[in-house]
Image (cartoon, rainbow, N blue to C red):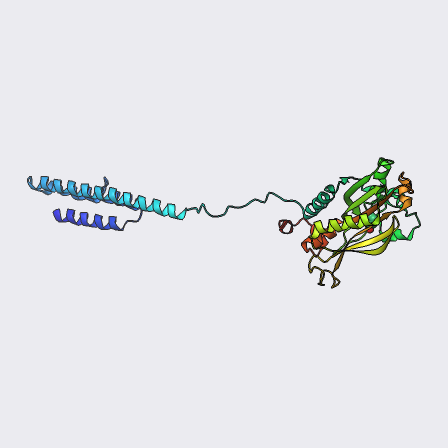
Length: 340
Ligand code: PHE
């Protein structure tokens, strides 16, 4: 019987040493020490022992039970600690890892550029004026010296709503609307940003785009005022080294008229792909306000003169950021917009 008890103790120790989980230990406890366990089964044979043997074997059984229990508790503590350590290791979070950044949105490149343009002219004492996008034929064309049969209307392929109502093709009607409201007071110094519409659609034209109009009317305003203003604007907008070039052109509502180029913002004027190897980029149309436009707007063209200019914001944005397809500005692809 003693041998059996020793053997049981040795086997229990072996199994406990190999146990890998608290569940296994529980199972060992039940199998060896439980009511129907091996120890109980051995002790059932106590009846066959002599009176002096019985207490000795009983004592030995108790010692073995105590030893197994002690070992079970110790092993269980070790296992639990191990499991906890493993869990801590597996579930470790690196608090220094960058989190998932939620993009809070940003300004659209067109708005960034528009704000820059506005700030430059606000600094020169201009104020901001607005006009309707649904415009009359009168303000969009006729008051701007473009009568109904004028061939220059062909340059601005127009969305007509009716014979007299259209989507404005340019911000120039705001010139007339502003002067009508201000006359006969002087000076008039406004810029007028806003959407305009033309029936064009390709990589460099969109049926909807944005312009900024500029208008300065006062006594003795000259073409040199226009040149100085636009040269200053170009330097502020594209950098101190930017040069400007005025080419003779034609607009019905300015006389004389010019198209204005800046030295290429990419190559600085030496010639590259962006400027088609000319060194120059066209950025706007301008000129001295035509006397007839002054007259229909309420000013005496004998007393006052003025200059006007108009530029496309998309074009300037594309030049400034090296964007080669205008449609990117309208598709609202976050991968594009997040770069500004
Ligand atoms: N409105 C003209 C255009 O859209 C630009 C312009 C504005 C030219 C003012 C001269 C003066 O092409």
